Length: 359
Image 1 (cartoon, helix red, strand yellow):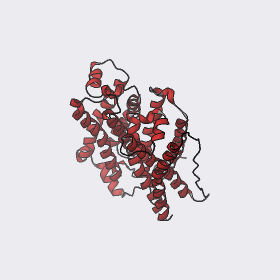
Image 2 (tube, helix red, strand yellow):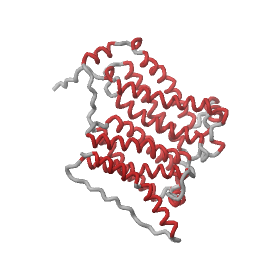
Image 3 (cartoon, rainbow, N blue to C red):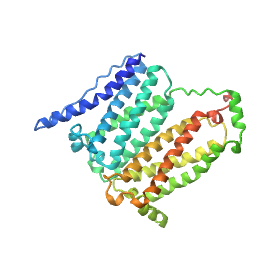
Image 4 (cartoon, rainbow, N blue to C red):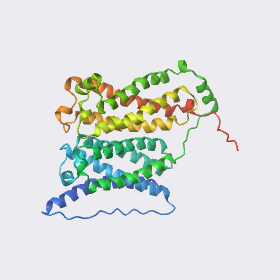
């Protein structure tokens, strides 16, 4: 594939800016609204699998820029681009959580799409950045869909929500294609054997991660119990003093903590095993998916907890903000460091020889 394909995708994503402005201006220039449909014709040559993947990510990149426009207009930084959409769309997008995922999708996901398209264009492997996106996207989708269904806006689900489900279905297909990418880890056998002979005393970084995983597991379960209305005084005091947003009626924080408890909790236990026992070759991929999911979750949670769109009674108290930020930022950053360690120095996790199947 030529580099012009990647350039074309980048230019296509930027076209969402004038398109949004023109579409919004046309609506408000008339006194009535005409319904219509926007059809994106995408050519799919039979033998051009890479072009097909690029087209999928091109659509995602286009929608990411639209989400960035939504976030900027909600903050009154720009005006006249998606005003009609913000008034007529499902009310979920106007919540603090919806606001934060608009910024995440418009900045972080957009960068990931461009990186994956560039890797495809240059013939490089994009499995690592793809797995990070898979974790981020799945976390975003699960919390947003379940929060819409069980929160205070559950009765306001409209046609746009159905279109959102079609977008998610296309994204899930892209997730499966990423998992089919081959894993490329070229490590010499001597390096693998040497790394696996080293005990914890010779791996101080891994020891720090092991020590971190225990309180991280406890914190994950604790916040899950808080949103389940645990009657413990510790849970009630924590909610009132540090994270009142967990009780927000939008249900996004509740779903967020339950998803984290059910998935991040087992992850910490599995990761603890992977850091102690050599040869767990699934560790780099697992940490990539989880670090992407946790980065998206914590960004949305921290931002929504402090955002002005969150009712004042559910925002983090000013006196508690330093502790809140310290704990939550560390809870987000340490898994990123663990992921970096597993992906850049994978020798301890690789197997020295392929397993032989007994026929």
